[in-house]
Image (cartoon, rainbow, N blue to C red; front, side):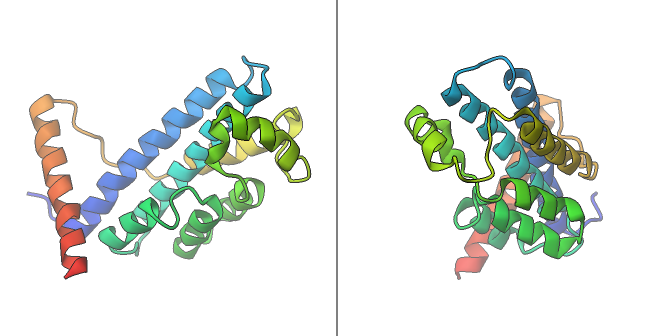
Length: 188
């Protein structure tokens, strides 16, 4: 039997998923960022870097010693804070005063994942030309990439997700019921 309170278990399980997503988005970014030259593709690659940062920040928030209640945290992730790196960095910084959160916020906080669409990406070349985003500037891209890599490297080790199918189904069912019930209690 697990001696951890359910709330902590839910947070760690959610954190494990966000950490996995952060690593996968970052790996895909590394594999593709220097392969494609078209500016729309560069923006799509950059979106993977933004998503890696977003997921890593969410994992840090889940791992905090005093995280928000699970239902409140998930509502924030899905609604208000969703893709807002600056808000997520502020929330992560409240939990742990690591300078990496401020660094990521300064570099990436103003950027949006909507640039994954070609039209917005092409328009973004003109709209964002006066902002800090410089997709074709190798020096800036390296600084941003290193910041996200540091953010991911600073993640704690989360519990491994089950590999056996039956254990995985039981694990997911328990997790779903945990946070579904948290949502129900909050609305009451």
